[in-house]
Length: 134
Image (cartoon, rainbow, N blue to C red; front, side, top):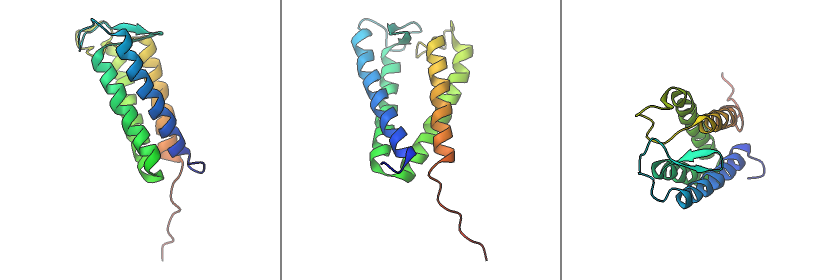
């Protein structure tokens, strides 16, 4: 893991997102599963569906980071692309009945920042050397 930025990033992000998902359940008691307004976890707004998504993403990243470089690279790029989509869509979903994961401005900033980092690492680092063509 020391020699692979993708494995390190996947493992750290995975652990953090798992922790955030678990902590989210501590503050969302009484919040509807897909409520458009959730409870605050520091400055981020979460509902139980948002927590489940954090747990799933955290588990995928952690598994990939512990498993190997190629899978970590793929999962980082995939999760980064999904977070880019969520970050952009989230800008339009605030105060909307379609905001089923209770996004707020801080969530959007975090999702976009996560997307940039995960995509950057996943698409640029740990590439296999190009094979020579005859």
